[in-house]
Length: 209
Ligand SMILES: C[S@@+](CC[C@H](N)C(=O)[O-])C[C@H]1O[C@@H](n2cnc3c(N)ncnc32)[C@H](O)[C@@H]1O
Image: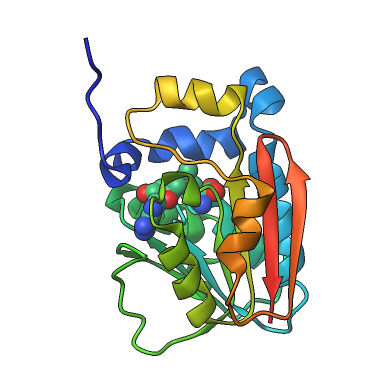
């Protein structure tokens, strides 16, 4: 029997609590096999801390656990979380308020591809665990470049056993990238440097302007 396929929006809209608990109440499985979620939080935080009072765009902010970590551990003046799964945004708003940073952030519903930023730019944009679900990554990267002034940070899943398991378990399409793909996807962008770091199950990139 073939399995039902969902869009990434449908898939994530019913998983806010589940995803938040990867950080908040990690199981032994999460600790062993989902170490990457902590690495990507840390790489993005280090990049955010390179700037004084930066503004942050968290693309695909999900439950907003990362957003709170970045706000609490930097002097960022404002964070906009953008996610097309509204249940994720609702979780993120409550979580940010409970963690005492609700006044420095806003979580809005929208698809990054079509969302109108009305000319607003951000010092740092982060897409953590997002391009996994993006088909047209070239367009995604061009928009990330266009709306940032300082740096943009992306996590990139690679192919392998974990990706095969995700393809089997997930009911939404997932995509993977090798180092050459990552370099190619940064070609022609308005950046001064590109740093690529290995992590469990993939890589992180930091593009600086
Ligand atoms: C795996 S979760 C990661 C959440 C968060 N970034 C983190 O690392 O904890 C991926 C999130 O990206 C969102 N997403 C994926 N593609 C998106 C798009 N094109 N526009 C807005 N949100 C998107 C999903 O709804 C989901 O909440």
